[in-house]
Image 1 (cartoon, rainbow, N blue to C red):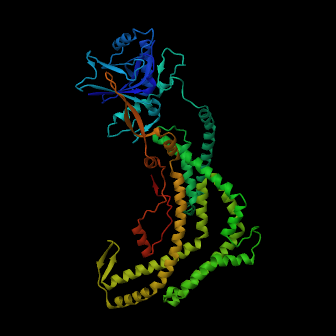
Image 2 (tube, rainbow, N blue to C red; image 1 turned 45 degrees about the vertical axis):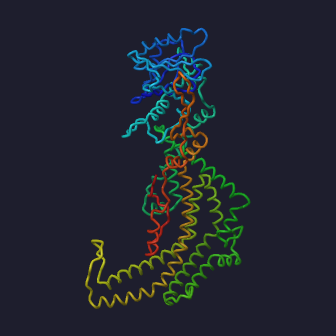
Length: 593
């Protein structure tokens, strides 16, 4: 049987006194938390420990005695040994250290008077494990199992040690400068660890949280208007990335500025990650503003997006109008003219080719008129959009995604027209192909059944199949060209949504802890031999193994509305082949962890 005693490093040079700690239930080990110095009154020690038990819900008790001989305290050892009758325990620890020696001598007196000590046969052994009390108290052992959480798996011995030290924080509030009958040695015995800046921030955060909570309630009141819950408004807001991001940030604010204190470690980390992510988002947005409003970049960006507008945005010159035709409209017109001829040497159905080409050319002229009407306001719109960076880079990126969607709406229309026409022909050909084989699709049972057709049906089916088959190459070519343009825009918007999702979900506070204070997120511990002298127990040093960076991201990543494609590559290729519409990746209902 091996008796493990976890001893804090800060008590190695403590004056003689009593060892306060806890016996780990179900394990043959004890955790020493502090040393109560002599002189003391046993009744006051018992009262103090009972008060701590009611505060911490930890079974704190006197584990034994600690002896550090000094001049004038020759009879201290015998006095401390006799205290086992006042503080009865199943095992009474007697730790002593001589000046000039690194190791401790340890004796364990059982309640039957038998002396348990390290013997040569190895039946009974004592191992002293030294630990850094401050790091163990501040660290969180993973996987996380919060206090009071029900679990089928019994807590490990190491987990109980970390939990005991973390729950015993009221014990560490008493330092040597406090006026009281008891003097203790622990990691804060020389004075409480605190920061004036942190305390000032705590005091200043109270009115700030009250003000932000009022703003949040005002936002919820505005969102509760009935006009905002109409079906058209809900449909449009669900398609706009800006509305989705604003709703997402409102949920964040409600979580961070909630008056309820975080009860568990995971709740605290989630609040901290959201708050730090919001601050970084605001900082990046301010950097974007400072870049946009330097050297008149807003006007240059407007001239790039809409070449039809000049710098002053007061009139439209014929030269810039021709520039628009050469840059945008002319390119699309040349593409359609190429499709209306013999693209890549392919012979198309000329009648259908001309109808589709003129139809799409008409939409190009509509789009030019749309840009013509919007051009005087583009610079002003971009100026106000740039100010949205005050709300964070994610808002600016969301607005950029919506602007791109509006400016490329004609490409989306071309894609929908081509996809619907192509899908209609594909499903028509598949249905007529089943007619040739004497089968039909059973809608009720969702399967293909046998069916007999008469001669008229087969004749009409043959005519329709021939017409659709010979018109398919022309339709497929238009569908292919506009699908490629649509995929380019979906890819661009997908990159924007991925960037927004990355900023929203990245656990920056947890990553900062992992880099600056790696002991705060512990994956386990490692032991190294500290001292092994004859006549003394084995001394080990317990060091904390930090959590891996990949585990930090996996454990503390903030839940977001996923912007990743749900379909596999095979499903995506199938949709493209049969002409089903490919929507943007951002879906508000796809909330994932």
